[in-house]
Length: 178
Image (cartoon, rainbow, N blue to C red; front, side, top):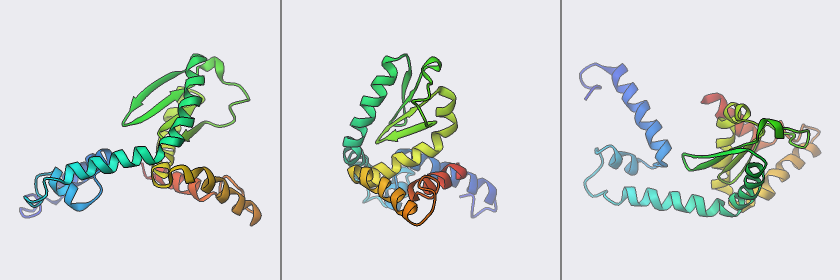
């Protein structure tokens, strides 16, 4: 289409839009992406089903961690915070009056739940926290061991345990790309 008739900028724009849509839908393999866009082989009608199964598996794998986030999120909401579900992630923000020294971070993620000290902190840290959601989807319950292990490893090497933690480094890189 646009590639063949010299409209490369238009084709690049279509491609970028398609990639963004596929990322939101969790379509990661080429057959699923092609099938979604109607350009895949006709024998690929199962691609959307496979993508759905993979999405369910990611949620199930992260579910024990999400349960922890739901408990924390419920406590924040009971103290006047707000909650909304967006793109499969529960976003919870503490009420302004609830911001206390006991909330030492801008936001924290457990599975598919992001809890922030305020609406503003939630918006400012969301790209970073969504990378943590993806990490929970990959690591599942093992993330509860892998994250502190990475911090301990950095600490033993004389480095900062938060800023050099491999999961935090990945999240910062992803947030800067967004």
